[in-house]
Length: 353
Image (cartoon, rainbow, N blue to C red; front, side):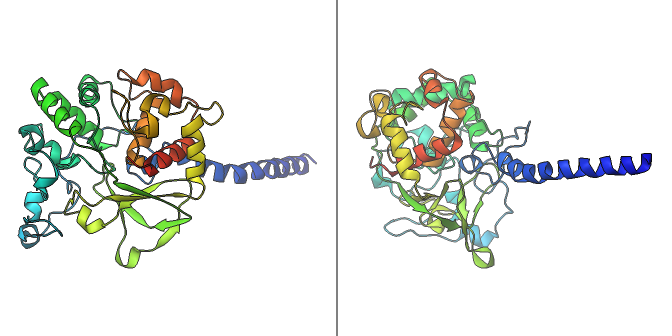
């Protein structure tokens, strides 16, 4: 009798627990994919306590060395009067300047940097200041604002929520290596150029299958060959080069990006950006000016990389970016969900600069 009662109790317990386990599985899968990994350059969430690795230099830090013939062959771009090989293009202390007529004369910190700890600003941010989604586009930002960001990196007030993001750790090292004069001339240089259209935002249900290059929060690019294809976009934003080969490895500063977003994203983002989404946040134009084209030392936002913007909002929301000025943003982003951040940054990126 006792044996039968024991088996009956066990059966009841199993029946009660089974639905809970099955129901929890999808929820765990969804909750595990948090922290906007698509914005930081990863396919999975950051593991708790992920260690910060030492900064690596160059685009191929995690890739095997290319054959000598490939690195020394001269490459060409449409409209460029000069040619460069991959060694020159990948030179952190004197990167290729494909279109010198597109920008003012670069000051030394931008053109060459200073060995060993200060690579040329023009390597990651391009000579025209447009940059790529995995770093930043400083062109057209107020010089005082750029200076403040460099000081924040240097002083520990600006870090990445996702500690795997190598670019942020590199900027901290660089900012600590720059002197005041170098910071000033670099900031004034990038501030002197206007931000022009660079991102095309496309609403879609499916996107190209992609991979992140470089390992440490790198650039996203479509897969090629047998691995190429499409997949559902899900709850993410996928930002890729408009011309992958010209962007990587050639680093064409005239070749922009496409940001794929879920259908309905722009309408939701417009409501949040223009009127605060019925109290969830505040209208962005109150500080960033009409059309989000900047207002004094408040930076312009229109037409900039949504992946980059999403990282900044998330960093501010989670107090890993806490420099002067961000105190105002803490309350602005406090109530935003990850889907809200996706919608806001996609809409902002769709605006004409």
